[in-house]
Length: 449
Image (cartoon, rainbow, N blue to C red; front, side, top):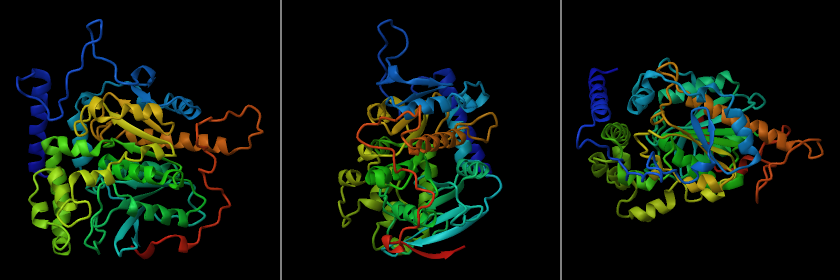
């Protein structure tokens, strides 16, 4: 790790320790929310909306609408050792957990095979298959991984890929236009919640592996893209389930409130580097100078997507099209949101989590941990996340539940999910399903590395 990065990290941790343990006057965070009123007894804080119906699993709480699937998930999570209460030294250091996963050297590189997909407008996205791309008959499960908005393949994503491989799942990392060496062939970057490119990638994977259940996991701000896709496409999403690790669920408010200075500085540096690489190609469509001079994530987002001449150029119109939960009522596959109460990037849970949504939708589940930071969730070993095995455990539980639902209804003792308005049946592809016609999709595979 670079010496300057070590110094910056040490300063951040020192400031945080002083603020938390010495209670220096005037020291606060940008996300400090209103104080919660005490309960009638004068002790503690008022319960969050729906907290009285939350189910405790280990050290976490599961918020969801009661259903047969919810009951099955509680049983699965209660057998998960990762959720048991621990007293690791770094458990109360959310900034440290965040920094380790985002900035710590990722370890040995992954062996990947890259496929570039040419999109209808001439743009290109990439799928990085970890290990080797499975043959048509050799993919029992496929896991599509969506990194954060900056496109960084973090230490946590690499750990998730290795864990998925060990469990017999084929992981593929989705790279947006211009990210991670994917060429930018059109003067267009991907807006925060525009799922058009992700839809083409999902269609390609479904075409290549029509009989394999397809799952997705997103990290951080990349959850905005995944949730937008699931809401926009509903039951036709092609996914059997999804998990979002430290999602940003109220994106506009998140941009407007800002994030801790160190996170904002790192995110801006990563995105400026990508923009400067393609500055000449973008100059006709984007105010490149304004984007490179941005001092906040909001200013950068406005410079890229709300400049004069772009369709719906106002900030309000942009978020009408890109807010991740704009179509949350249409989500029709099980989705786990793994969040921590001490997330320094997202902000306090009372103001940043849509509690009522998890109480009303039978498909959305919130697993709230008291500790974990942002995409951190460090476990027994400092560099390893317990969030990844929990996300995969959720997807395994969903798969087992769906397979039970697919069995003949005459089976004695079989319990129906009894979910309102929508049926689970048809979520899993049949083992003998043939591939759809290539003419059904608008992608074109360009080349493989």
